Length: 468
Image 1 (cartoon, rainbow, N blue to C red):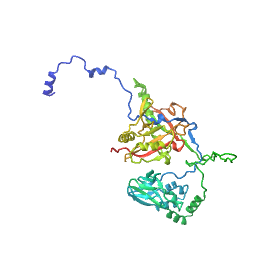
Image 2: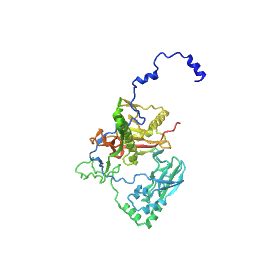
Image 3: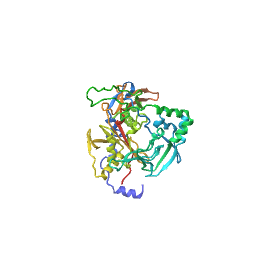
Image 4: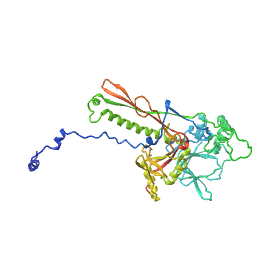
């Protein structure tokens, strides 16, 4: 002990009672249950109507549809060079179901890469359409003429889109709108002349195009479904048309997906350390929370059934100015009837709030189960951090109609499984090994189905970091 410490201790009065540090040895500590930062509100799981699926498979039957080739095209990039994956050319209506990989590879090699500056016109309305454009990167707007002669934006194309595909089969095709770059773009062009030139040497391509032109035009409604012949407003003894409703011969089937883990607890811990909280119960509670978080992530992002990957391309919109504006939200709502909810990353909700502030608008809020949730046009906007934000600080906003009766989006589950502790979630005892470790198999079964394409819409490439 130093001289300074001796002087300091000498100046302190002698201790007259038991100190708190020693007293804690005889006290009972009040403890919290184990906390977990990963737990979120999981609004998607709460708001989806869950449908019982017997046999683990749900089939979505629809009317026969003739709409084909409405997907997106995928590219590969090597340095500054961009190339289309040959098989992806099958997304073009003229090449749908064409399976000659050698010819598709040659068509892919004939695609010419072009770099387009912002504001540059790729194709002008009224000009002959002699090439199809494959948009590898950037945004292109479709510009037309309004009813009073003013310029109007008809839509926006983004990464993976194509336009001008009618040029491959129709030599008299003309552009019905002007295609103008909103941002710097990388596009690949495939000319009709290149396709016809290759068809002269490739019998498979020539026969495919000939068969395509020989197919009689099918009568469809505006959704691409086979038309139902009706007669209305007639008088007298007019002949009433005959009709029937045709079904899709290959309906989509959704199989329940699974998320699993094996929870291990040492028997000594399970036997001795259970006061005031049961160790096994707490381990299981946190494991189930993590499993439910993963379930919501899969419902959003899974390539087979996730909402972002299974939204119909005709229901994917692009913001007109990058940031999510009230106009974009209105456009998203207008694409479907009976929208029940928006789902957005919290940063996207904040970005939408900033756009409202710029216009002097105050979004309303609605009460959902005792929670005040922001809303637009009376439709609640629920936060969901499972929707990804890219490195470019862009994300997506989902809008959906829900329920089987409304032909909306539904969740799929199978309750009543063995050792079930929650609907479609089970905990099975797997035994004790020679090291006295108890194992439990924790399993959740789930999926989601979109009953008709317009039940789900996505506003893509939403900027979340614009502050001016």
